[in-house]
Amino acid sequence: MSNVQQATKQVDAVVVGAGFAGMYSLYKLREQGLKVQVYEAGTGVGGTWYWNRYPGARVDSQAYIYQYWFSKELLDEWNWSERFPAQDETERYLNHVADRFDLRKDIQFKTRVTAAAYDEASQRWTITTDDGQSVSAQYFIMGTGGLSVPMLPALPGIENFKGRIVHTAQWPREGVDLKGKRVGIIGTGATGIQVIQTIAGEVGHLTVFQRTPNYTIPMRNPKYDDAARAELRAQYPMLKERVQRTFAGFDYDFEDRNFFDVDPAERQRILQRLWDDGSLNFWIGGFREVFFDEKVNAEFSDFVRQRIRERVKDPKVADKLVPQDYGFGTRRVPLETKYYEAFNRDNVLLVDTKATPMEEVTAKGIRTSAGLHELDILICATGFDAGTGALTKVDIRGRDGVLLRDAWAQDGVRTTMGLQVHGYPNLFMTMAPFSPAAAFCNVPTCLQQQVDWIADCIAFVRQQGRHSIEPSAEAEAKWVAHHDELANLTLVPKTNSWYMGSNVKGKPRRLLAYAGGAGTYRAKCEEVKASGYEGFVTA
Image (tube, rainbow, N blue to C red; front, side):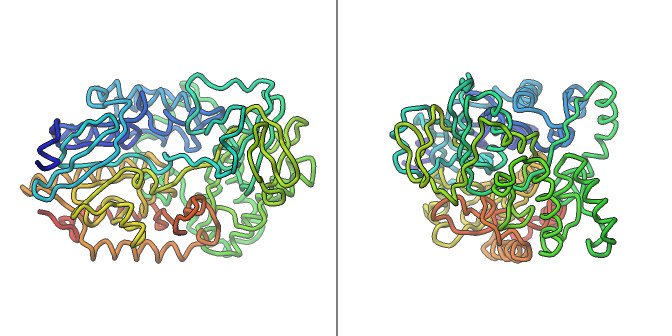
């Protein structure tokens, strides 16, 4: 018997993940009358905002663009409380969406997809779950997110620690009692920064193990009253269109002028104005040359370094917190709230792990080359296997039984617009490699665009009386070459980061996100659709 015949359940589409992309995929495909089954490993909806409930977890895109646009009623009835909402508010919003559109009836929780195999004879996928279920679907959509496979530090003896170890992406719903405890945290990326600034005043002692300091931007986070919300709602139609055309899917975009065409005094005024906005505007709303021109990047970098030093009392500590060996914006730029002031506290110790490397974890704590740091709790803000991790963790087998992770390991990562892969008909992905959503986009903007494209593509296949669609090898090679050409024009590959896969041992070093901008990407996706999916093969 074939895998399809053995499958106990038949649906039109299986969607993996019940976050922003998964829920919207369910909504869009149900609109077409398709029977859809969503599988979600967690006990509730929310994706990132279900799993990442660590202290201080907060959105760093403005609430008024970090939302769905498909329903005017939803836009009218949901009231954001502040410019950058905390985790619990965003999770409540996504639960509201699930209830408002009756999505839960097609979501099976506490179920992890472990394998999927394509059957060429039936042109269907057989999807297997961790509880032994098997379901047959014509269309298979991986809405598993780009930052959803946590990485633990590869430290000898970590299993010997007698205290508690917790990864920020696996934070218990009931929380962790940190009051008065000796706490260590590994990692000072966006997540680590949010944790550190939040718990510094609560713990007995905090030891921060930092490998690479970050450039950051101070967050300005005003509360919203009814008048402010009414003003924002009046702008929603404009914002809905605006975010589709900008580089990073935000409501702001780069200056039309070139950096060195502006006189030095005016440049400084512009930088200060962007800085004072208290958002990512300073990074992706200033001058585009920050990504391409080392001299421009150096001016941005120096500006931020000076702002950091102004806030740290001890010059020696400031030296550790100020990035020196890479340029601003070539790594993920976090927003922060009194992060640097945490290091002015007597109960906070900054450990530079490049100067004094971590050697092992003992029963009592972490031993560096300089000695033992005794801990009660160890927090790992050590990031994710970004972009590819959630896709390669599942045994996805396409034509001729070829395993996706083996194909990528042998030939390098390949996708067509980060939406499909040659040799895997009817497999669709969101936030996958070689799309802006992989790193350089306000996630809801790009995920909604990708899901809209996927839904339209499926509708096209059905309208044509066909059963499957995939990119040709030639179209895929063309997209990969285009992606690589743009990536190599930027300064990003000069810096080690999760953008480049550098945080995962043995992972090939390559920029995962499309650097052409969300607006350009959308236009290219629309061109493909308007051409009748030229470069794609239907059967």
